[in-house]
Length: 154
Ligand SMILES: Cc1cc2nc3c(=O)[nH]c(=O)nc-3n(C[C@H](O)[C@H](O)[C@H](O)COP(=O)(O)O)c2cc1C
Image (cartoon, rainbow, N blue to C red; front, top):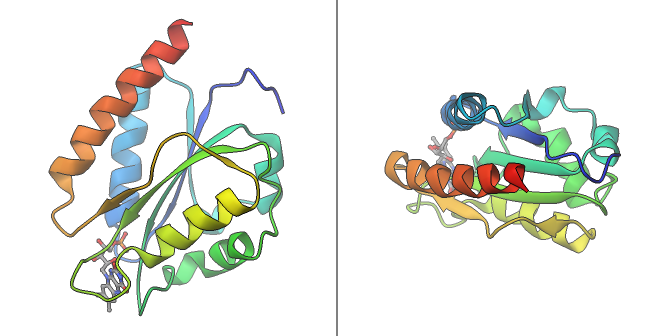
């Protein structure tokens, strides 16, 4: 792992495509600003790869009663159980959910807590998004991309 590598690895977990859509939007903003990134679904992300990267953004919805999306169950349960090499990782989590459910953004919250407990470092606080997520996500993306472009200039 190169400690100076600023590549942002965007990983998403989705059931009906909202998280994937936001991950794609973030990736496009990175591309527009020539910021290095990768974009991968949770089911296609090998857990050992966490040991080879420095920075990740996880964008995950919550289903069932606080559960991960079906295709992301293995990924999430491994992270909840601290079974991935994340101690050097800098990360942030974006949660998609619905405040009408008891466990609002439960999957994202558990991922965030598990990564911190395993020694990873938050790049910034978790963003939990309700069903009308567009405006909040775009405002967050504007701030995030501005801080990333500042970082690239250093
Ligand atoms: C059957 C069902 C269960 C859900 N369970 C939760 C939940 O427990 N907590 C929550 O915050 N949102 C819950 N949601 C809301 C979804 O997370 C939300 O619609 C999200 O935008 C879906 O994103 P996705 O398309 O990326 O999967 C649920 C939605 C459905 C239809």
